[in-house]
Image (cartoon, rainbow, N blue to C red):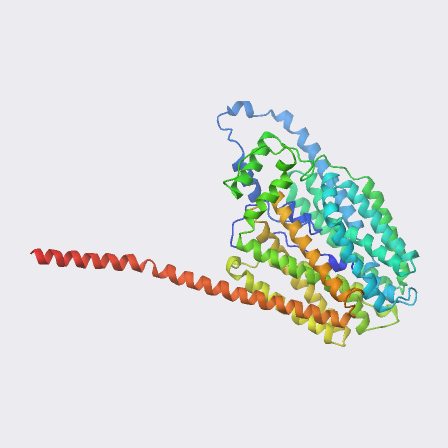
Length: 541
């Protein structure tokens, strides 16, 4: 069963690469991951300042405001911004408090619900992939068109529906509807991730993203810990956790109603002044110098969204964009499939009836914490990514394939727990690096579109795999054969990445060898010319 804990990721705020930072990533990195990623913004402001029309001919005296007019406005703006940010962070924290999520699969397999493993594996859980794929694009478009708040309300209502169905549902159809509503909550994460950036000024994007992401992570971590303490220490039944989660989600709905609705959004409700239009057109012109600059508001064909579709074919030629987009599509599909079915694997390895010995919450808390640490450490990896990207991806993917085999072959539940934690952490290590490599040199709209396309393709791939191997209308494999398939999947990816890495390194060495030999040729020809001239002079003498 999927949960926020199984799908939550932790992202390092700053990524160091071999390329200069000059992109607008404050919105695009958050839009399709459901995460409030926080990347370095200072270079964005420098870029935008360079693109603005110069004002050096204006008299400096006229632009100097009076001190008495400056002081009150910033103070009021600062107070309003702090309150808004605090409310958003509190809202993000409260909506993550779902202590029952780590124990949904054990609850479904418990005597209280009495579903079989085949029903949970082949009939109930696959609906999550189908639901997520079906609502991903509509929810994203509605998020932007309706300006975030209505979609946040929809997300809260869907969360409440999930827990109501878990409490009162008794048959497979009810649980399938539960998975359907859970798919809506997953797709709607984009609303919170991008909502905060539409309300604060660009100079505060970095701080706002950091605070909002920290509040979400704290909520995920404390939710897992709370659930584990209730089960292990207090001996609470799983149904009690469902009621607690329902209470938190109901409170979250109340908080949603008081959120401020933004006046603008990324695509449909974008306010464009002449100056902003010049900045955006300069971005597009940089991506495609041959493109004709026209107005952005001259109809659907000239809208930001369709302009980005046209510009996308220009950017896909970039090697780093290709390799990290491929990683995003194929590896994230396998990653989330593992998360969806790992709790069923744990129950298969350790089918205990004593709820006190189910440690799903503690494992989710540990994986969240270690994922945060590995994501943070990714910012300190200083290598030449244009050369070593394929090798790093290949090594990490091979490591994940080994962990999948270990998880599937061991009979020790603690070994399986540790392998799961390491698997999630290794994936979270590469996520922030992929974000920067994909987002560099893009406008924020084009960046958002690329992440959306990657996520959508990953969802389609995940759905196809689910239909073939997990759905009862396909092969309907049990959990152990499924994990063998995942092992083979990651092994194949690792081999392809390593072969690509060898090809890139060999090509680089060849180019380096050619560059070293090129300066020697003009020198040799010069020496030969001198000797020829010398012999000519001697012959004349």
